[in-house]
Amino acid sequence: MGFLRVKVGLFEPTRPERVVEIEAVVDTGAIYSVVRRDILEQLGVRPLARKKFRALGGHVERDVGEVGMVLMGERRTVPVIFGEGGDPAVLGVTALEIFGLEVDVVRGTLREAELLLL
Picture 1 (cartoon, rainbow, N blue to C red):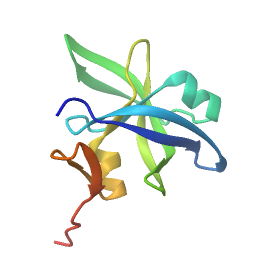
Picture 2 (tube, rainbow, N blue to C red):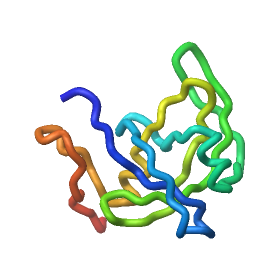
Picture 3 (spheres, helix red, strand yellow):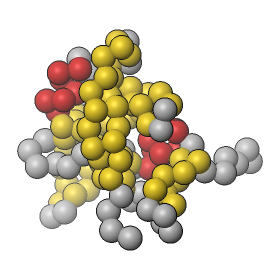
């Protein structure tokens, strides 16, 4: 299938009128989404905590916060890692779950997931 890339709108949750669009790789193995620090700071998104993550070659620490996201016409607030250096933009599984979406591996797109109550 290759990589699934999607256009995602980002905004600071208290200022939803200013949206910046980026392209992100969908990664169902990533818990959180990742956005470059400079983009988040430009929007006014501030870190809420610093967490340790396993990465290739060991562990890294990154700031985390919450960003408003526009995806497939819907708006939600999702946790985000402040990307550093060469960190790619990633749409993680937590964001997919918050939006109620899943990857359609046959078509190479996102689609609405069947939501389970129990």
